Length: 144
Image (cartoon, rainbow, N blue to C red; front, side, top):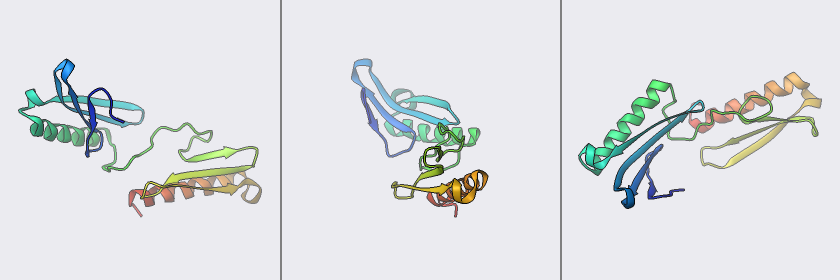
């Protein structure tokens, strides 16, 4: 959601900033990867106009992505894990004695399934869950 004079750009990781009160006009780039932010503002005035600033912002974003090792995709990539298993998209449910797997498909729709610990054992169920998650993420990114 755009706020404070910010508008959404069709370029991933790039937002347009137009704040009359601060006489600030340009493109703001923010590349996030492995919990770190890399950001830079490209002023229209200093870059020689709105289009030149956008071109500079896109070039900086692409260079920064390459430098930090972020995969070249315009799709959202989750790199920080808050699950109880340490694996993004795989969650252990003690009450139901299973591993839940969640993902987002290429159309942006969420998917989910589970693997029973009773049926596959704790290690086997976890390995199956991780494999399912890996396959679904590869499908979403078009790697398969």
